[in-house]
Image (cartoon, rainbow, N blue to C red):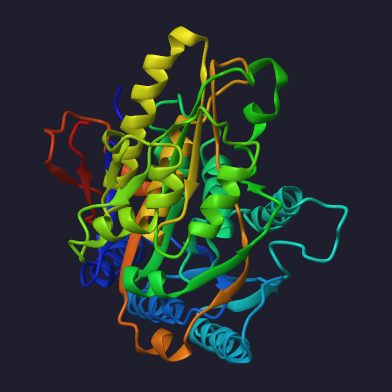
Length: 419
């Protein structure tokens, strides 16, 4: 069975402005106006400015007509931050609005996670808040989700919500065309800095990504065996332990940790093995043969690696009546995005299917970072195009594995290798 993103568009570094230049120059030539919704976080991570400045410059220089453009800044509250990081949040929001002003207006949306209503669970609050963001999706031709300054639980929920909105049926012919709506996920990635930003004091109330929890709550299938894929990153032991200690992960769960490899730091995987040795390998005796490797800097390869593992476990466990596939993302942004895409593809089409997919997460209540490290970071901008015009002919003809073809806007849509 082919992967949904058997062909994909992924650019990073110097390739990103070039891709945007060609994409929007083609829109000018075809006299195709752009109606843009740009979603970003109103957070302290200044890396979002690097993405914004590059995008606005490319769009402006292309000369294409922008008939409508709105920057939606999602205001995140409920976290304990130092005064330094609070000040950095205000400066970052001001800089983002100023950079976007040349093409459109800014709208600030109140917090994604409600921290004031004790009667609403964290999962329900996340679902309601995500729906508020999705309500802003109307007649846009282009949607950009910048995850650089959004918490992990927020950008995963938004990305998956947008994908379900644009691809309501994954079985139709060429579902990634999505009516021509271009969904881009952009990120200024610095895996080293992500490891230095500490997430502390995880909440006791686990958060389940909306739409990825149902099977865990159905009594008739609670006997299914469970396979847990914790996708590991630095300084996340507290969050991992909260998920392990919950009733979501049974004592007899099959545990398959995912480590970043290849990585810029060739010893990163070994260091994570040592960091997580006690909770993952000493206590439950997780076999080292269960370890998966996810590409640190290539989300589509990470997606394919995790997707392949999920499919293999499902195939082998169907003889037992079904299974639960559970993913807990704790890694840097690009791997987390790849894990989210694998969960989207694996999500059952009907409640009667013999498996379920869930994404439980222990949201931290406090972030600790050094503002100077944020300012000194030299991130690499990456772009994933998940739907839209680039996939218009990606599936229309035979393409040899590993080859590429030229799409509208001169975008190379690359076919990944088989699992």
